[in-house]
Length: 477
Picture 1 (cartoon, rainbow, N blue to C red):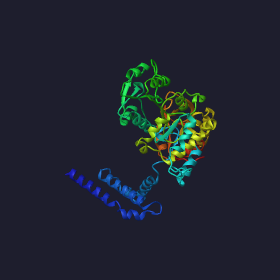
Picture 2 (cartoon, one colour):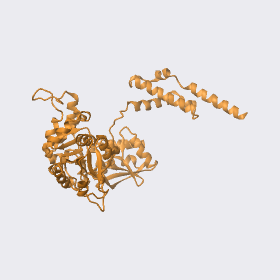
Picture 3 (tube, one colour):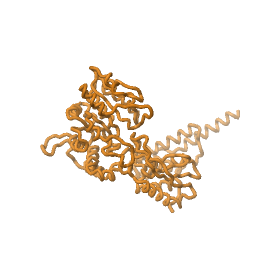
Picture 4 (cartoon, rainbow, N blue to C red):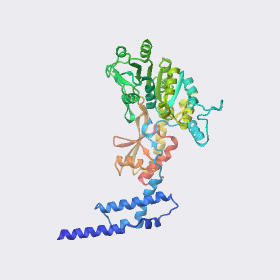
């Protein structure tokens, strides 16, 4: 009997709460319709009311006061703010990873951004030849620049390096065999695997050698009447160390000529300058690979090149000509914004010293530790008074990374601001910084949130400080 009475009380409570939920039209009468498009307002109202209804029916009902006008309006404002906030946003990268795949990879310099604005706000000669007055080719806008910078006979640009590899293999090896070292069958970000791309291209994979050792005779013994291409994949995103052996590109080129087979190298990151000047490990430049005599080389535009997302294909004129004619090329072509950004980046490389200081990716790799230290000190000076009671803070030595799959073993000495919050867990601080109006992305090590100042620009320091003040709910002093 008591159980029945309790059930009636509970049922009545649920019904009372449900009746207290305002109608959509009533809720809309509370709202200032000037603050956002009506469609967003109505959607936010319905979502708030549906959530409250689900809470009540799920047995998690609260008090009637929680359905009051002011409480519901506060929930509505928060949800509407979320709808009005762009999904694609800028963030502060305090991870120390320069070419961060999840945060847009390479930053573009002002020269490239100016080009994007111009072609986006006006008509352009994207496929119009200003000399002949007839239809032109979008690829010609950057091909000459690429050839002059690298020594290649011809070039083509598609929308990313995976597309470049796919298009080249589809053109040169469809329904035929491609010989590649077993140790070079890599997987990079986004589960992009060389064997799977080869399969999609219609080429048949012929693995040779062992994971750690491949010899020239492995390639030669595998060549048969079905062989169409020798492929080399530069292992820019991992290393095999110890008892290893790898066939050099010149050796492969000589073997290819002996058997009248083209040689292709997927260079991956692709650099136009020798990065050893920064004290970094040696990476083959695109120019060096072309000079060695390779028939085709592919690489990314938004990694060590420091440009927009693109896949660049360079090589011998006759082979690039065949690739250009492949119908698949149209599905993989780049747009006017990529072309504008890429052309601006390439033109900067004609003055290499300027490129090293102006292109953000290169400049960040060569950033002096003293500059990074000054940034860390600036941030601490800005936040110390306001956050002294909220968290411990100090500057600590850390190692930055190039990122983007390039130079996986290379540490870049850097400096970070280490934060150890007093009244919350470090995981909560990391989460709250991600949820601020200007999201800040750091990394947690040794129970501290590290903000690597190599990848935090000078003009982002005030924004980072403001985000911290917001998280700890304090005013700047």
